[in-house]
Length: 268
Image (cartoon, rainbow, N blue to C red; front, side, top):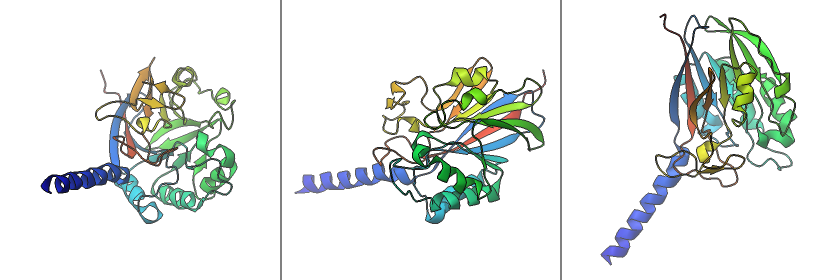
């Protein structure tokens, strides 16, 4: 009798632990340095929400964003869970957009799951104070620094979006928002010094202390999983994102609020 009760106790606690992971918000921080910056900039990136909510009106998520004290916020796509839904619920996007815009200047690009409702998703962001980028670059002043921020639509929405990005050479720091990380070489060639991506979910289901085992267009043991990557003087940060797709469950890939600290390159 004791063994079955012990087994049941362990099974219940294991399930609670595994499913509880999907409700935890993990803040992950990275540093990127550049001699084009005169003062630090803190960027909070949120990605791949897939209609998930952390508290009423995403209050938990917004509090995590606010506590990082960002100078700007980047939202890198995949707001919708099922892209085939005839009429997706966009009220949570409006709430998130409004909340983010009240914290710091916020910028949005689409992801592949947004493709069938891309115009509605863009409208939900733009009407609530968020700058939507679709194959364009704009100059902005963030934290006392002049940046050129570019953003592209997911290629499922606009396959030519990246071709319209051509960062100018000069003293301004060039930041690109792009949902998918697989085109890092092209992003770097376009002049992006930092790229913020999502899409991978860090594999969504993986083993402890490992990178992604698989994600759709990355295949098995993909080159890009999550975290910080560098190439020819460019850096790319891949957020593991917040929600899930296909299977509404994450395993050892905690929902992530990504914080990137842009720092001036030390003299000498």
